[in-house]
Length: 134
Length: 422
Image (cartoon, rainbow over all chains, first blue to last red; front, side, top):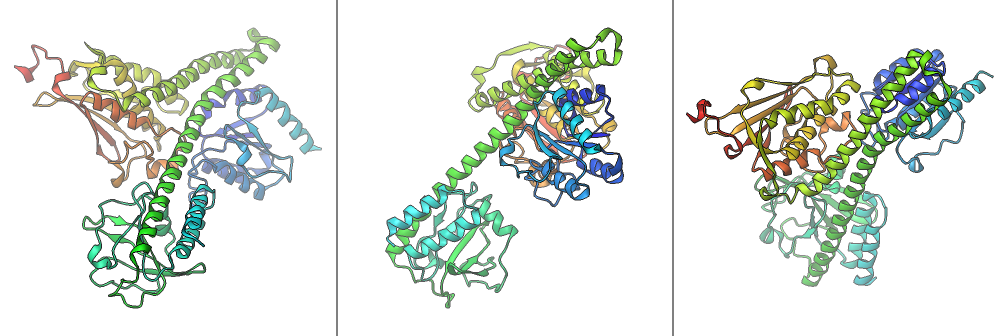
């Protein structure tokens, strides 16, 4: 299952549809609280998490420094690293990622611009999923 | 170190990206070098975080004159959130009757007192005192006049630098928001194009109904996203014009147009409602048939309602099926027309009602809920309505949040059978 977490799901339908028509099971969640609840309880079923960065912090990150929501996704990424480093996470964002912390320790965590060709993202994720299985 | 060198260092410091705490600490240290502090220097932060003013006079008790303002300064917020350990809570006799005095040792300066002070109107005013040795609370006569002049001019420089950096950061935050708001629909359009190109060139649409539906929905998305991007650009244009718009700029058209305005706004916001999983008919009108005819600038009022309604939708929460926006028009006895717009969204806090129309305001609840938005929507609304001599106020904070717009009777078209005018 591929989980998309984005508070503006209307803008990511090209991605969710491209994954769906490529044979992936896709789940779209528009808030971090629900998303974390689902992932934590179904870790084994989650293949990849595709994560927006600028999102409302929800209850989950109420007391965290999300820069008023501008960096909520980065906090979520940290949770994912601690939960299970084997679940790949793609931070799909329109924000300028140059100021973001470098993700160097694993190919499982990547930043992608939100204007990447949806089919290219599908190819990339298919590769990651294949490698993960090996 | 000469005073010129100190001033130069202060300017460099404020041009740097040093954290605010460092700036404060190093400023105090530099000031202490310029004017070895014998007693007290006082700086006030104005509502924009700048314009620090030194309280002049060798005897504070006699010279104190505090202007009326609330401090919204980042410095003040820092003091509020990170108050130094309270070692003493002393009343400085006669000078600041409502002052709590806090002390903390900072290595570069011997002692600093942070002192929240309330003026006659009970507004808080941020104050730093740089203290070396206040032993005698009755006597503050340690400064010589040249020290005061130096500190005063330094304080003005620091105030100006603060103002510049505050404006700069607001400008950058605004550009960030606009960029994000514009990139979202434009990237959406681009991605729809990528999706459709692959589908059109590599798939047989006729044999895959699902894919055909997805393809068609992308066409609608492209139209919707384009409208959204255009609306944002128009909103920005309107914002830049709205501040200087006057009655002479209005293009008034008498008609049933108010209903058309609402219908147009409802139509253009339906995709947003649907995409956020609200009911497509969540925007409702009361007593439409009874609505008076108004003589208004169509473009301006469309922008006004678009901004108000889209704001309500963006900040809506809770049960999505129960979310409604209710619009009602009512003619008052004096002939003015009031429009009320109620929404069951995120609500406002008591102290936010007056500030909601300020360009950089974002409600406490909104901060936690929504991150995007340029923040200029309601400012534009207020400015545009002012050109119509029309007021907008918040008449209820939450459940529902209610805006009331009062349109003067000169914009109301008289009807023969209208009982008000009989």
